Image (cartoon, rainbow, N blue to C red; front, side, top):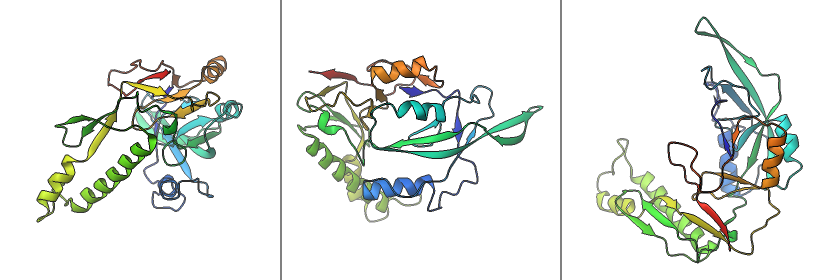
Length: 267
């Protein structure tokens, strides 16, 4: 499942990212505490004024995490088994044009919500994966090497993530305002770049017998850009004529630009 950009939005220019109730503050809390915060973030979206991207769909493409959805979709989702999640209110505006100029923006009458869940920091699905069959490649930050990752368990992969987080933090510490190494740290900086993973890749993901087939929606961060949904959820969304979505099978390519979408195998 992917969201179409025919209904595309962004945060308003005056959105207060430094607020303790901003989406950034919410995300920082999730990363630090590995759970949902008790506060509800203040979320606003402005739909693009471009005629190609200004539809008011059930799913609105934009920066709201994880998805900006209509109340109708929210009610549909409550009938399905989802990862731990929250629904947060989103104020949606639509810009109006007059003679080619932006005249004003008006609040959309329909209710919208952020459907937030996290399959990385809170509820990862790595234990579902058979790493003895799933071959994972890594492209390094210097883009000179592609290596096959030698791992056999989810725990080993999490150890890689942890080490990479440390490497990234150190690179940030040693990077000057021009994007280069600070003076005196050139050797360490080059070594860090050589050992920093830019991205993870795999052509096929094999699942083990721990996979929970009752789950109707999940993601596999790092390995895929896709949101996977059950056939029963897909059929319901189609039956209800939900707008703003495109469905594909794992391994298919829907866009001119390559988006990681590996095959999924249950064996």
